[in-house]
Length: 276
Image 1 (cartoon, rainbow, N blue to C red):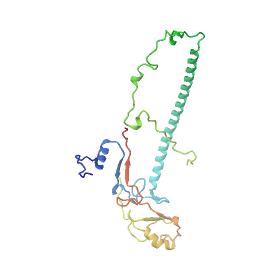
Image 2: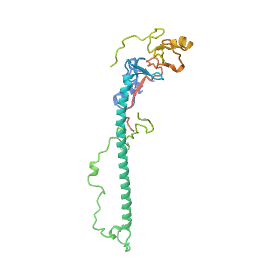
Image 3: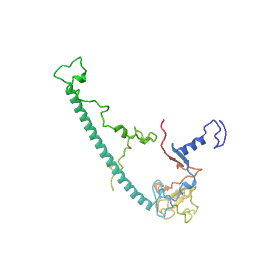
């Protein structure tokens, strides 16, 4: 394989850098980019707003949220579900109308077929020396046209785009799913103002430090403190309550470019592809 610079086009090999550059410039194909440190949230930031929490709540799985962000998210989801439900009902009405049109077209085809069969039955025998069309009554009065459809229909027809997959003649409208299940019950980053420390050891807390939340007191401690101090007697060092395994919630951390920590650090954007 040849070895040359990224922008060199004299080689006979279509390199990965050239393919990546052409894909980015063409506007087609899936684009992938590696997230840097600035795109990864800190351990004390809300998973929805990506800002430091002022009134935090934590889930049993260790995900941190801002209480206000949860309420705003619920309201947003209600509006989104209402919009999706409206589109779903509109699609159902369109499908019902399409089925009625198909039924009417099938009934018209059956009636037309019946009339054609009735017109083909004659009380007098056909003349074998005359064409079939001439032997039929009133056959000479009819002037066959070039097309059964209305004139100018083909000229006014505009074909969709062949380049975008969603606009090809074979493409169909996206099927909408019902946003709610009937079985369910219907009921700019802010700067960190202070340094976070462990409630017991006073060690600094960051993404590089595994942390845990004690459910009875809501205090945040390091996992090292949990393993070396708290698990010996299973007592909350802040308020003295007895702890269980469910009361120790491990916080989910954001990853960095060097350690993923279970976080996907690659963003993808799907774009239209060119069809052969």
